[in-house]
Amino acid sequence: MNVSAAGRPARASRRRARMTTLLCTVAALTAAMVPASANTGTGSARGIAPPDPVVVVDCFSQAQIRPEEYLLACGDGNNRLVELRWDTWGPRIATATGTDMVNDCRPYCAAGRFRAYPVKVTLSNPDAWPEHPDVQRFTTIRLVYTDTAPSPVPKEVTYKLVY
Image (cartoon, rainbow, N blue to C red; front, side, top):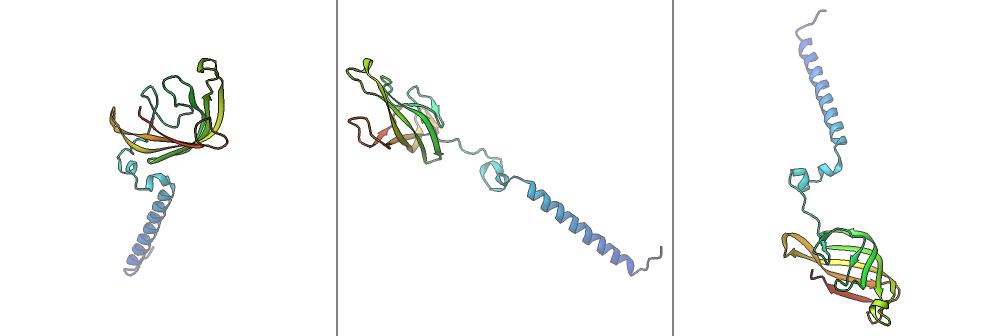
């Protein structure tokens, strides 16, 4: 095959152009295959572990995340949130719907009946947990009764979580 001196640079230029196109195509395909979460610039993408989620501390000083049940009356067990379905669990607030099971204590608590009250639950005001200062825990719980509230509790009530 006869190749002129003028043809050599032209072929080399075409070869470089093809190689550049091939490398760009490979780079584009590789970028398309990387999960979106790896491209967000979050701490985990930089090799830094993401912060632990905020917890809610129960009556037994156990940290919980999205619990299905939560005991409100630690002393006697006469008030418990059950069937909790969490809509959100974020660094500042957590929200759920569920049922507040409350003992009517009639004629007295040992002989009382548990009654169900549909409720919306909001956890908020995270703060350092004194027993584990590196862990954030929710310190406030707000209950909004979507039907009737247990007497004499108002339809909306907020409690400090001191566990």
